[in-house]
Image 1 (tube, rainbow, N blue to C red):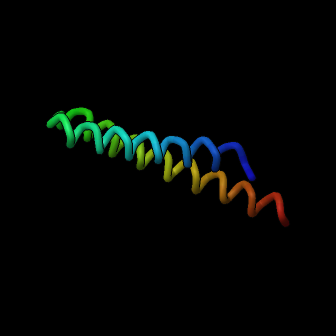
Image 2 (tube, rainbow, N blue to C red):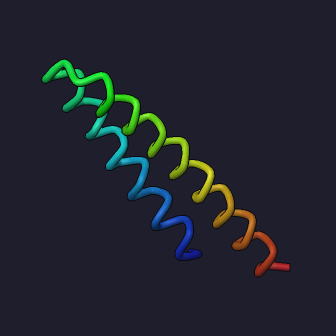
Length: 57
């Protein structure tokens, strides 16, 4: 498994936590940061998936 997939998954989880905490305390900025971090993590995870696929061939 590529390190980008691991880091990307961690960013998605951290982003989800930020969104949840932001909702809990009513902090729209924290929610937005969490959403952005989730997207960044998903992109990084996808890049890692592509790298894994290339390595297999």
